[in-house]
Image (cartoon, rainbow, N blue to C red):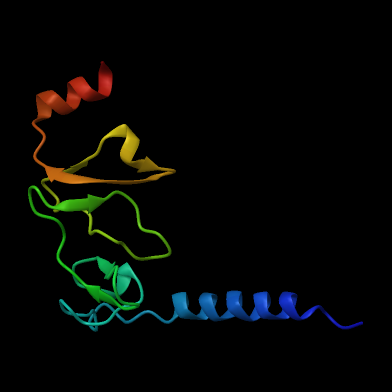
Length: 119
């Protein structure tokens, strides 16, 4: 019995993606800013940003205060990089799609954050 062509193609695609995720650079070979990347783990900054107008992704800086941000990666890449460590990605509820949300990086005081979490 022969497998349908679409099933074979699907198997090859998943095999390729599996191998692609396993072939990551070592911690000493992380990519610099603006270098072409495949996934977030390839970059020193931890952000592989997919350019909306071209089919290429590049290592980018994490978001500073007021810049656009994204909460979760999609297939190992971001459309907008997450915020720097001292900032939070704040978004409107209407901007959330599934587990991925787009917003702006903002400083949130400890008191505000506690109130947001518990009330």
